[in-house]
Image 1 (cartoon, one colour):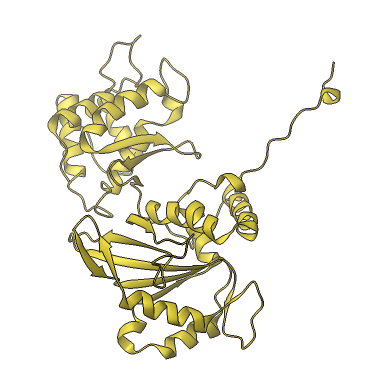
Image 2 (image 1 turned 180 degrees about the vertical axis):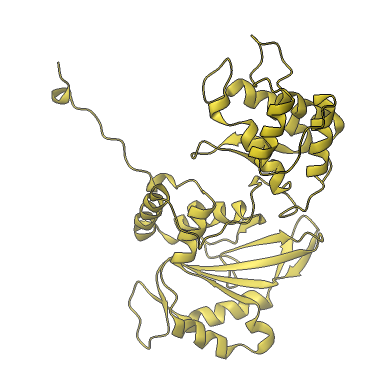
Length: 331
């Protein structure tokens, strides 16, 4: 990845604090503190005593040559540098929200197609503007969660228990897949049941090689089982089997390339549990070629990914604000 020299020099000025003392929004850093800054960013770069701005710009250029986690994200080291630079504890001449510093940083980053913002964890992240994806390393949904993250997970569980299938798609799955780097996420007529052909929405993903994979998604709100008689809130895997075959065999029209394409992979997503028996049954019904095209996501997968990617909760999952009554006032 390459940034323009003008952008690198502007960010270098922010790291060095090359602004008037009463007008700047960044800490002034001498040679020793520049070395400390890059140590705090988990790097081994040490300032060599040369002109600070030029050395920092050159170092940033080296950092941007490191491998990228995906096509729309800068190297993880660069993201750490931005987080250290925008630490709210380093606010100068403004509050901890740092609106002045954020405006200066975004004036430089927008030129490269990125935008910096503060997330609810009070850390600064980068967003790729054209795809609206957050430039972070691949989330680990299997890591231990903090107490705050567990509370958000419980709020999302409550929401999934009461939401409709359309709300699951529009309020949870669409933002989640967009956050994970998928794009052109299109709802396939789910509300009016027109032209679904087994899929509720489709999307595509661009590989680092610029090849494109197409995904179709079949969504069920409740539990997916293989029982002979299922409850009204559950779905039978035999129905999903037919829809998966329809999804894989029917073309979709991609307006970005003005042609029809086949779905490469099918996601079967359930707002409840997908039983092992259901997965095994559908696996035995598909031949070896098509079996590798089917992927499953159940409630636990959705919950863990939403928490790991710091996805904002749907409005219906947020705690309601209590109204203060007149007789509750102390006067």
